[in-house]
Image 1 (cartoon, one colour):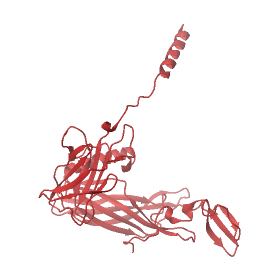
Image 2 (cartoon, rainbow, N blue to C red):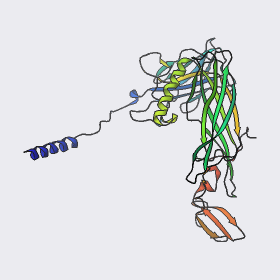
Image 3 (spheres, rainbow, N blue to C red):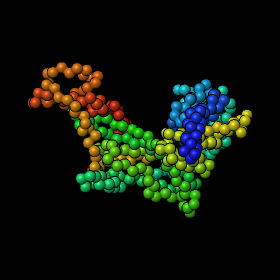
Image 4 (spheres, rainbow, N blue to C red):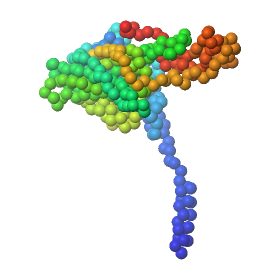
Length: 367
């Protein structure tokens, strides 16, 4: 009897589970949420406002740009600037006509086919300069041979003697030179990579607005060749009001949980933009108003523990006068040895051309 009950239960489970299908809700344009990301600074550069729509449920990437919008920034004295759409969803100001002024307040107004939105007037808080950027050489670990694998920690110090700036945000761009170990035409390149982390600090609980040894980034030698020759980092320091600081705190927590800033964007965090016709309808993103101070720092040192990332490059050898099929398409010459009368090829373009991950154009700031 017990066996029959077990069999009956098993049959019922199979029949029921066979009828279950995944429910996918239908979504349309009405289900999408407008996302507005904007930044106005006091720098002589174009301000950018990015307009897109949020993802459907379960999606994170590939936002849909919002085109044909009327986007303008206005200050508390009535001066305004209309932004021009240079590419779908990207609206830029003319820096020769309009830029932020510390102490002035600014608002963003956006008119789209999805409705009209505006931010409150936000004060452009002055930001102090970065006092110093420096690094400390560290031992990340010991490899299987017992040799140290080194790297470095980069820190910054800053302070505001006036005590006005209490909430800070930083981002940075790394640039380094790298050289292929083969005598090929495109051998020396530079690579620049923007930061994908949110760096925040709050001095509101301190008697003085002073930040020391703030950790910017840790660079190990075991993952890439950033420290193999000369390395540079440009750090940008922004002043925030408390509301924007809390907004970036939420983004920071979500990025840490999801694995990276670009995995989430502000697609799920409500900011300071509001609908004019229907204030209850959600708008995502943030219009940020901030002063910026920047500082560049170079590292040229000797570090231990680099992996040979070109070890797998040589793949075949041919007599020097031998014709090589598909040369320049699926294989490339990296070594020509006249004495031995041979040429060595690779099937990896990265080993024969540094522009696969960089540029041969030397940056203007490079010594």
